[in-house]
Amino acid sequence: MATNKVCDVIVSFLLERGITTVFGIIGSANSHIYNSCAESGITILNTHNEQAAVLAAGAYYRTSGKLAMALITAGGGATNAITGIVSLWADSTPVIIITGQEKAEYVKNHASRRMYGTQGFDIVHMVSKTTKYAKLVDASSVQDELEHAYNTALSGRMGPVLLDFPFDVQSSVITPRLWTRDTLSGNADH
Image (spheres, rainbow, N blue to C red):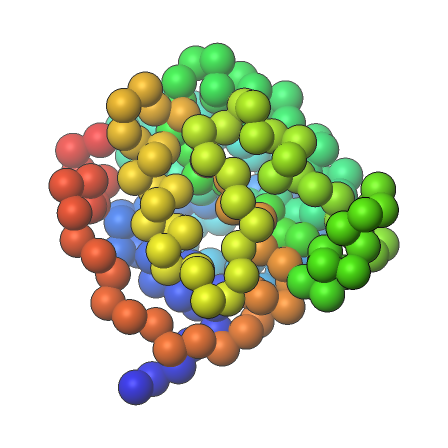
C-alpha cells in the first residue's frame, strides 16, 4: 500500500469532503499543512490575524453553505484565534480549525509545564468549553479524528471543532485507508 505524509492525508480529506477554501496564516508550526494545501490547489486566503481567519471561515459557511477550514499556528497564533472560536460557538457555526503545535515529544515531556517547547501550550484544554470537539492528534488516529471532527461540526447544533497537530506528526508518514462514507459525507447538503 502507498504511504503519505499526514499533511497530505489532511488535504486528501479536505478535498474528499469538498472543502476547497482555507483561511489562515502560515507559521512554523503549521507549515507542513499549509504547504500541502498550496500544492494541492486548495484556495488559501491569508488573513491579517488568526481571529480573522476563524471568523472568515465562519462567514464563508454562512454565505455559501460550504464548510471551510481555518489553519492556525501554535502559541500566540492559537490564542489569537480564541475570540473567533467563541464567536462561532455562540452562533452555532461549523468550522474545522486546525492548529499546528510543537513537536509531540515537547507536548509529552513538557505536559506538566505551562508551555510546550518554545511556544506551544495546551490549546485543546483552552478551547474545550467553546468547541464541539477539540483533540490533540497523533499519527495513528489522523483519519478517524478528521472524520469525527467533520461529522461533529455538522451534526445536531452545529459549531466549531479544533484538531491540534504536532509539527512532527504533520510530516509523519502513514498508510492511509479509504475514507468512510456516511450520511454527512460531502458538502453539497450542508
